Length: 491
Image 1 (tube, rainbow, N blue to C red):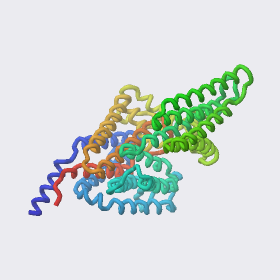
Image 2: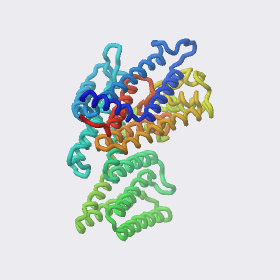
Image 3: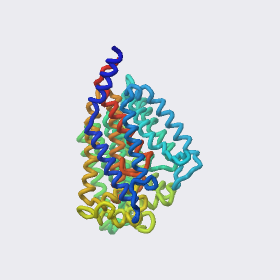
Image 4: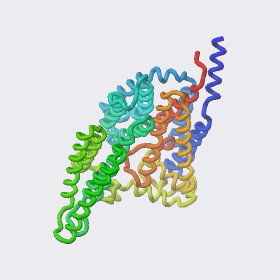
């Protein structure tokens, strides 16, 4: 009887698998291998399948990844929930131990060298962190609205991030910020997500236009714009969360009216730095928000006050960090991205050559193994972080669009699977997977096109290497196994 139930259960897993996702996975692996061939091929090579070549070794990584995925599908998905914290703890120990790794590869200590094998624990820590978050948030009585519960979630996210930063692998650490997309789906207030977006806007606008002066006035456009946005964003939050339209309109009219009067005075009478007026208006706004909190005892006014104060502090700290804390090469990369420096022979070289390669592909591309920029090795890291430029050069716009549509189909399918989960554990893990894939694709492709910073993260299933391919396979197939077991009979 037990054997019959076991057989019934095993057949149920096979029948319940989402084969559309598996088909997309196989398609991405196939196109990824073709891209590795194109990126690593050198004129004169005759055997693409030789283990002495990167294309040959990538076949090994693909084969082992498929075996790994099959093994995961054969596991009982209840073990994933049962051992989630243990797996997470083991990964934290690996990450911590890697900090003291004597082997440094391209300035990073994130690799464990075991003879001929090199592994990057940060790639595997993603699925471990996702499992830990899923188990924590599936705990009875957990609610993200409780500060204690929310603090525990932040701890699970930021501890591995800290260890990875200490390994000098900032790019991999930033991937963990993608978990906030999952938190938003699970009930995190939209104001927190908005705050994160606002900080990015402050940084980009404030730094990009810090040295640009407003016409006829000694006013920094960057600082003026940030101070004005702090006021407008804060007033907007009052409108949304305090439900006081009259108060909102009054604050907006006073702030914009005072700014307009000061601007006219500076242009027509005595030129002066308008930022003094904007700082005074911010101070008045903060004082008024505190007064409203004391008068109404509505806590939202206090949070909006904290947002305004935090915004001002962030802008000043970000400016200091950029110029005095970041490493010179990191500062140059940011300046190149923001258009403050060109440096085509230094920090901007990779992106410039990548843009040339993609542009030279035209509509239909130059054909398999016929790319000139990539064959002549003009693009550094063209088979790892910058592999998308090979797709653009050899397959052109059509091939690049096809690859992006495949990734879009994968992400859409994963969202569909996450939404149909019957338990919160599966849904949370599913959205963690969605968030990680979305972050990797958006940042990697944007990096190659010069739209996002060069932070050195792989393109899923395309970039050469075993650690990233195994890591993404673990992420995906664990979710497929959870999804396949959602309606199975249990002994």
